[in-house]
Structures are given as C-alpha cells and as structure tokens.
Length: 143
Image (cartoon, rainbow, N blue to C red; front, side):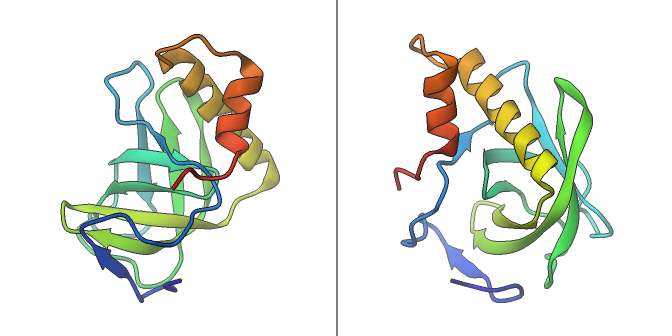
C-alpha cells in the first residue's frame, strides 16, 4: 500500500481490497458532501465523489499534500462538519484523488456512519431498512 507522498497513480481501481464499502455520494441529491483540506492551496470546498468509513475520493486540490493533512468534511444536511486527518493514497487521471483516514475520533466515526446510513436510506432504489443500510456501511468492500 502506498504511504504519504508515494501515490498510486491509476486510471482504474486499485487492485488492493478496501476494508469498507465505498458509497457513491455524487448523486443529484439534497445531500451534498464536500471537503476542505486545511492549509492546502486550492483545497477548499472540493466535491466528494465517494465516501466510506475508511476514507473518501474528491476533486484534486491545486497542490497535492505530501504528508497527512487535517480535513473538514461537510454534509449539507448537517451544520456540524466532521474533522480528522487523512493522507492521499491514489491519484486518478480524471482529476480525482483517493484519501484514507489516518485519524478520526470515535465520535466523528459514528457521525460519519450515521451520515452514510441516512444517505443510503434516502437514495436507495429499493426499499431497505436501517439494519440493511448499516450492514452496507459497516460491511466489507465488494471490490
């Protein structure tokens, strides 16, 4: 696995197995997610494309962080953002980057779980309940 400053550059999904299922959150929805990279040039208000309990992908900032960085994750349906620390793990040629959480307080992790469950329940094309949504969020990645 690539470490900070050593990025996986790819046009396809990495062959490594992810621990958590990624949830595609860039749907046209009332729930918009975005992230700010604290202190990174061009790192304000980046769109989030997918999100999991392990990290996120987002639009690439002007400058790529070479070490772990503080982030602020915003959800338009919650006035209180989630704060933590992440590092870049992948750079994709379409202008996205993949980031993994390296520090996330347990309370923030539980809030993120709630955000993702609510997102799935609001956007699922089939009727599912809270337990099924939680199983998707907390379950292993299908990839």
